[in-house]
Amino acid sequence: AYGYVVTMMGKFEEAFLWGQTALELQKRFDDYVSTTNVANVVYPFLYHLRRPIEDVIKPLLSVYTQGLRNGEILWATSACTHYVKMYVFTGLPLSLVSEDMASFVQRIKIQKHRLSLETVQIAYQTVLNLRGKSNDPLQLSGIAMQEEKFTAEVTSTNKDNMSYVFMQFMR
Image (cartoon, rainbow, N blue to C red; front, top):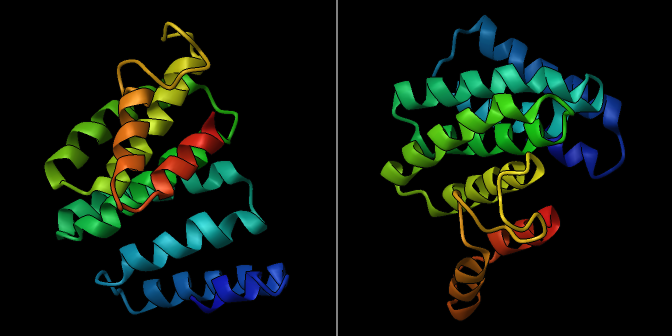
């Protein structure tokens, strides 16, 4: 967590090193309990400060699987959303991540983690649009979600609107 705070001070090299230290300590003490929460900070927020963004994809997918296996559903779904967001910006083939996203949506629906589900649905529909698998590439409506329905639901309630902000960013 300190590494994340240090990024706000513009000390990116130091932040990256703190992240590396956290990962190293976790390995050294074989601490499987904190694996998912440490990785959810280090990989999406610190690791790419000095490494290619593609290098966070595999570890985040691994954290997702490990979190599900350990019963750490919140951290698993968090890793999943980080994986999806990071993947979209890597420049890697979107066809590869489409199948993962469809699977994530189904699994997260079972877990009932609303914010993660909405985030993955938005990213999934964005990928589908970019791949030409929607009627209107400028509308986030199709297999993964319906933008009008989503917008109406989110803006009519007092729910957390982070998903709505993410949707606007992806548009």
